[in-house]
Image (tube, rainbow, N blue to C red):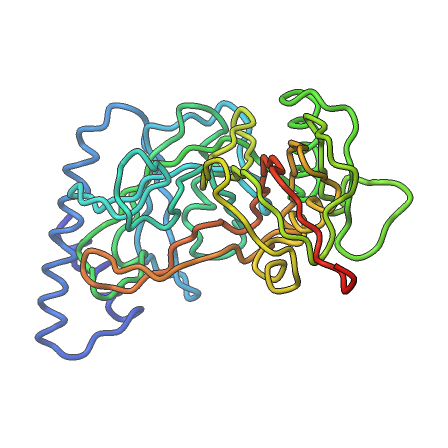
Length: 348
């Protein structure tokens, strides 16, 4: 009876996702049957409760089932829409690693070059967003949870028979990214570096008061130098700079690049400014020779909802997009202005 049900669901899946000919149909039926047996054998070793989430076609036919296990749902879980700050590991069920937000794994082909946590926009109304659905049952906390997605539901025709295995962890649920970013920046300024006031800059125009949904760059001077004039367009500037991502997990700041003393010497002109975030450009113009400062740049004055990417070659030679700066990233910069040389005038 069980084998009959496996074959029946496999046949329907083929109808749902399409196949080329009878011979391929039979091969794929065997592949999917073996996959279901492998999932059953894997889950038979799990001693904690298993949640079964069945997915149906628009005509009401069962396509396949997603399995969630080793999870805690006693805390806060996702609603229909929103954001989750998460970490994840993604494998095939046989253990072959596909992706992770853990940079200590040491593999340069992962989606996020500098690891996580990362923001994930979930929408459980969407029919096949399995990660979103998982976070409706996996609560925020250190335990997280695991999920198996059969290959038919994963939708990769080149890898039928290879179910996906996820390990998921939710650090925080977020309703409004801008409001959350505002609180994150304020907490960093006050609680981490101990600054009550800072210069503020806006993308286009000045505003009289700052609200939680405004996009604002903060420049907090930590040490005042001996300079007597702010950096201006046309100046040659020598500085030290560290920068990275600021996130909610213990107000971590992940260093992306650290440059030693006297390592950056540039002409502060329009060409240089086009290659750097607006927030950094505006923040530097509050500084003078000898100053050291933190410049906190919101995503709206950095790399926005797109982030920055590069193309990488995966293990099977597939070309993939890798994020250097993930979407909606808040950036922090520590800078020390070593020297400022104004442009020469005609009299000089």
